[in-house]
View (cartoon, rainbow, N blue to C red):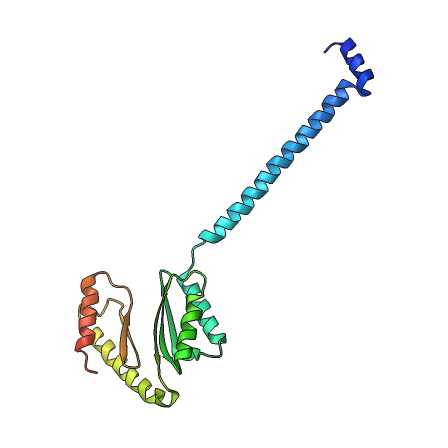
Length: 192
């Protein structure tokens, strides 16, 4: 643009072309910065939300969180309930005073964020019968664990027995279906 055109525009518009170009650049730079900044903020917020969704849930954390929730619920006696979690699948075992307590415990476990499934193996046992049943359960558990320890194939497999109201449950991780079957067979052969 030559000097003549510049002076004509200056008189028509009331500002110099250089000032107008500077103002335009300033506005474009500001708009660009706002667009880029908005994109960065939106992208960061979106990524943060996705990070929360995909954060791995630790089985130990789920177990602890469930035990705490059971502890604060007045309907349930926590000292009588075991919680085990493996790959976000939870098993609750033990003895409760009523069916309402059993259902409450299951509801609490299912309500934990991150839990896929809940297997409720709680036994309803009246408080008056609990001491006799606990003594029998302890004796059964001792016998079954002794049988597992005697078996050369199972003694180093890391299998634990637990008895609740006469029902024996085995827990642990085994390397093969054969080991699992052998452990089940050993429990069946153990004297009650």
